[in-house]
Image (spheres, helix red, strand yellow):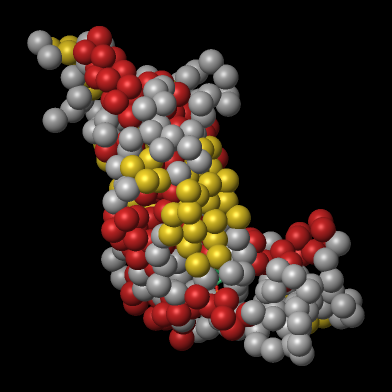
Length: 361
Ligand code: EPS
């Protein structure tokens, strides 16, 4: 069975929901580890005042008993505390009583760089809020909860995934300067996965190529405009003799001394550390708004100004980590199978015993 993630939830709606299907039975989950990742995603310099309202915590509605997965769909919920201010504006049913709180007036001034205009045109919307609520990066919260579940599974076969911000020096100062100018920032992050065995993914079809799947998983995160694997774009500048990771063997097995490929050759993991980098564009909600057109009048206007983040690159590091972890867990379950955790772990061990490969110390 394939590991699948389905999410639902609007930024200011009642809650965010994730259903993970295809998990083996018997995986022990630690609630505090999931909540710790949710807290990491909320931290970071330059986040919106929204983060002082929310204190994200995971609730489990199904698929878990006494802390162990049942092998049935796992249903996760993260509530939006801020929904209390949007009860009328984001009511799932036709709201009762007179308009009250936030989100009561239609948004007609799309922000360049956000989903607003494309969403309004695509779905024929007169209120851009119907697009922006789901397009918001708020629902990455529940994707991070799903990533924490994936990391728990990967840990059982010795795989560890971690994300960090690149070019972190001076980030605080750059955020302060951007905020003072009522502007926003992007940035770059890197996710590394250690302990990945060779042989995850396949070169057979592009749907199975792990490099393509990781790139799609990370590109699918809000505001990401570029993804690179290993030395990525820099490899284009090198000769073949400088670019590839030569193969050696000693008494303990086959190994490499370099890792320019970032742990992936031909869409298959090669046993080296996996390296995935992503570039995030500057966030599109500006306190000094860009030019746009009012969709209600057709006249020039200023784009929507709404409470927002100045930068969220530190959050992206956690979200990208979750995305990579989920895709690696999916690839590991394809390779090792097993509807119970013991079968999955045993299949991994048998494979490791079979192959002539020395993991890098
Ligand atoms: C977002 C706009 C902001 C961000 C939000 C993403 O929301 P708000 O307008 O409610 O302050 O804070 O991200 C989150 C709420 C979050 O938890 O990450 C957007 O437009 O994408």
